[in-house]
Length: 181
Image (tube, rainbow, N blue to C red; front, side, top):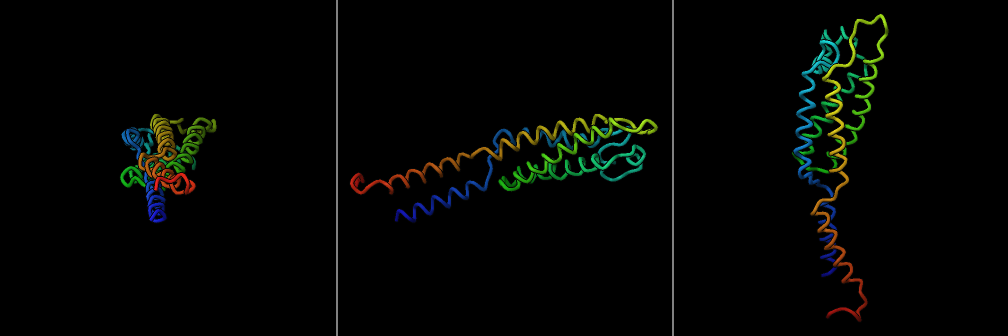
């Protein structure tokens, strides 16, 4: 009987480890995602906004948008936007972890995006980084920070399952002399 209880508790602990409980961080991540998606409507460089960078629109071509800017916008949409929404809705640890990893890479592309806009050739007619790309980069920082805290935090279900398992193991591992029965 005790082996069955122990196996059940181990299974409960494994199941609890597959889910996240973002708590109040869910609201912060949701707001940061809205800010991120809203930043796509703002200028990323000159007259080219984030949606135009995504679509490779004529304004984006005129502004000589470089590869880091394109990768930043795509990664921000996929990981920061869609990944965060899916992870919040499903509460799956794996999705939250993938979102964290992809969003972390997105931060690097965001930094490179801003840098490439600041180091344009002298004869270029393109403008520097716009408010949208900077706001999107800061929104991604918030998303990464909060997903890191969520992914590495332990849920109350995990702590309870671990406590129950420790109690059962401790009761079964005591010498026969000290058992209550």
